[in-house]
Image (cartoon, rainbow, N blue to C red; front, top):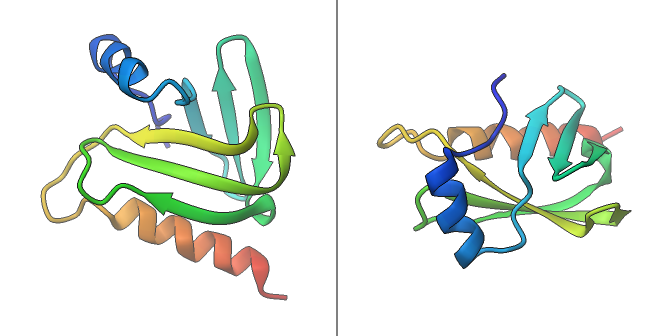
Length: 105
């Protein structure tokens, strides 16, 4: 799966408005590989306490609240770069399902 990242112009504008965004988030199945500047951390789905997203923002801004702090803190904020009308929240729905599957024994 392609990383969640924006073009350089969009990144610059988003960084002005949302300075807490990480550079890249890669889907690794049971975890996310998060990169910001020269730092990298692997966040397991079982370490995610909650997922929030901006329903009226484009691109969609996603916040992962963590059960324990990572090197980026207790929240990971990124944006979903792809926009398909009326299918906008499918990746978020899949993310909720994957995280919930990790929670159930």
